[in-house]
Length: 184
Image (cartoon, rainbow, N blue to C red):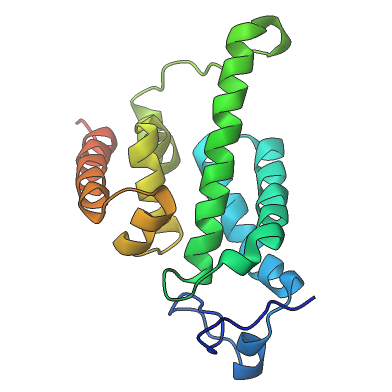
């Protein structure tokens, strides 16, 4: 099945860094979109929540949701990448909130995944440092540095003002600098 041409008559917008042949841009199948974005979305979700099965489920649910609501996509408001990442982020946040509520109600059903305090040597790892950031700051860092989204696109994905994106990015970089400093 092919996505419908937009009312503006133009091809579906991709991130400016992505290069596709003109004929592929005009009629992108759901399969093509899935192939383009499944890995980046999986990586974003996995880096955020560190749960492989949940990440796979969220990727699938994101594309099911995209298929259902693809007619709402407007290339004048956001790129296709931003639109799909926004759906993935919303799906992930809903799942994590639901999981936390269930953990509180039925704690014996969940195994504890608590990690011990990270040693100073382990703080050299960027992944460990990013995981220590607050959720809001972690999302901004991952979307900026791992998925090359602009601050404007991140504001649309997270549904926050661009100024908030900038302040979270600044704060998280300061925290990462502290976490990654080597004490001699």
